[in-house]
Image (cartoon, rainbow, N blue to C red; front, side, top):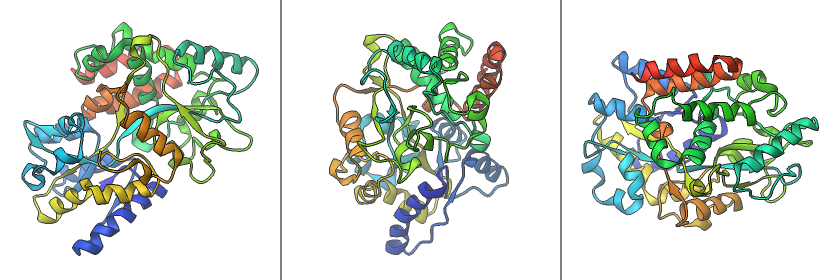
Length: 384
């Protein structure tokens, strides 16, 4: 299996997979790397695909279109319907066939350090947070951590931040059109979301290390400034995995907490995007199907939830399985709340080529904000 999680996150996954090894007598050789997209593509081109890979949804759909993924429908029966929401199942199918399973279900939020953050409390208005960021910069204090370093995928955190800004200003319909390639990347709305990211988060004086420093800072350690003493920043707009990435220094209720991403328009506050890799099978082997069935099962995802890294996708896992009050809060507020509506855009729908161009575009824009027109035209050319 090739996945995107390495370091302590990869070790957590291997701990879960060890239960499958013991029960099934099948050895799982897991490789975690931020370059999993390039590695999987090169393995396929060489005629030696992995049995299983964690992929972004757009890439998984590309491979399904090419007939490269195993159809899992018969292997799972009604189990998927019992374990996963209709929205998740819809994104994990292609032409009526199940092409993969989800382990995690990560919404996005604004993480803050209660010891250093002095801004508006749980703001629903984006402008209030943007104004506070400017005030902090004027006082010589850095508001945001926004590390982008992830090998060939560098820039993907910024891409997800831009998508949050877009969704919370322009709503789910335009967001879906953007992801489906119907709203051009050169549109005023997409340009505005990039520029707002540049003005509020990625500007020198606003982000730890400055824009250039943030590009080169690895995501594995680049968010530790939120909970360091003294804190290197007060805010992070990213996914539910942030506390697990920071590790033991993140103390719930002491130096880390979260609120939902504010919106530019009140009617769009209730919409959220989510991130989760889809585990797919490339080989039609009984071991592959058994492993993916294990990954989707309630016992396996309950065990994973108990290891305290990020929220799981299986809806039958009890909230109190998570040791962390933060993960319990996420599972309750985002996954168990009727007022949250999840939306799909480029983060889920874009092809692998478009996603790569988006990430590179974020890096290029952070290096030179005056290059934005060229950046957007390049991404649009990739879509076309």
